[in-house]
Length: 515
Image (tube, rainbow, N blue to C red; front, side, top):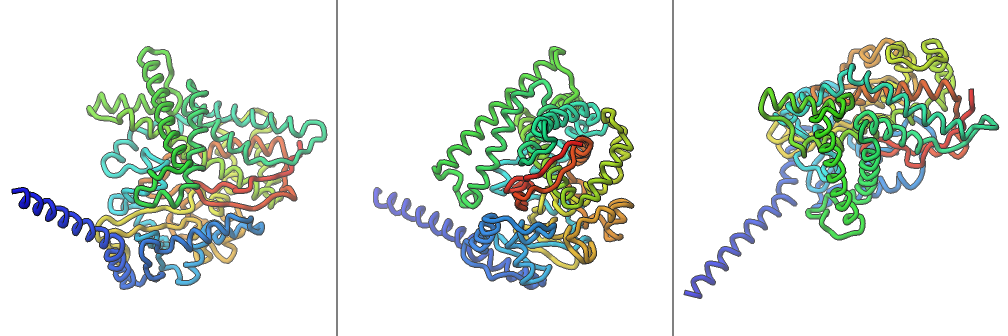
């Protein structure tokens, strides 16, 4: 009897081992080779698949090399920001792929195909598991299907223009406080040379703290401070996160990352619970993002029985920071760099701001009259897009244009490459020319469609916070230009690098002068 049981146990172990071995073999070699063959049949080119590592080693080496030193001052930043992608593009042409471990990433740069992908979100979804993204970002950005539809519907009222208008005083207050700090630095001589990046970075965090969580301002500041540390840690853990079980390897950074994750949940839950109780007792207003979100969620539950869970609301709160702070700080800082390099546009923008507002306080209605500022911001968004790429995936065999993409392929829309493409934007695609937007975005893309200009994505899943970001940027630029002129410092180092957004790796040293 014991012998029979022993044989059965051994048989089970063998069967399990064989099945597990087959799965590993299929994941690590057979499926990648099958996908490689299918992609080549569709006319795509790339390096041959190499077991497990794919192109990761070369990619990491080139990224490390690019980040080890600044680049020459130029708006032609693609080779510095995405060095390996740029290298493969030059080697194989626009129809190329790279190996991110055992997963191929197909690059799509044709505007019509991009538009097709973004208008079919149910067929071209975000990858179900994406290590770096999932370690930081949650909420509506990563939701799919019915969950995304419901959450987007609930969140929408928080970003209506009327809601943003109510947050306008908070935006102005944060900007004014930053200006006062700069006035302190320039007091006396009227001139100061310093790194403006930390101030801009703090500004946008301050704005979203007030606008999203006005009655929990201090807790929000703490929440966002930890969230920023998480983003820095995620970069250190970049390739470790893509190893199976990598987040459980007991490194110092991993341990700190997991501690912070728990802290974030506790702080965010405390903010949400406190606000819910205050609303229920009539002690809190609903004029900030969190209040509007909770009110909209409560209405959804009353009308349809199901809304967002507390965990869902917490994820949206954490997302507010990255979506509302990181992208806008990049837009403002690169605008200051561009206006430092192109003084004629700095002068034109200042003249327009003075014409619209004079020396009076800014008012919400006046922002729509800032035509030159809008042109400048659009050009900065084109040259220095907040997100350098969009990631989608096929979950079944899917038709795209005249191609059939196999299941299990990741699709990259390299926004920064599209924005710098001479075939779409002309020979001066890498030049700062805001006048290209003088007749609006549609005219600037010369009839090539919405797939050419993607600073906030596109299609039904276009960034919900784009109006908030643009209004905040206009307020900041208007207040700065009315009070200071500025130029690049001799110590300035041009160093855009891609993380979740496009910050300056070496800061932004400028010379500011009182006006």
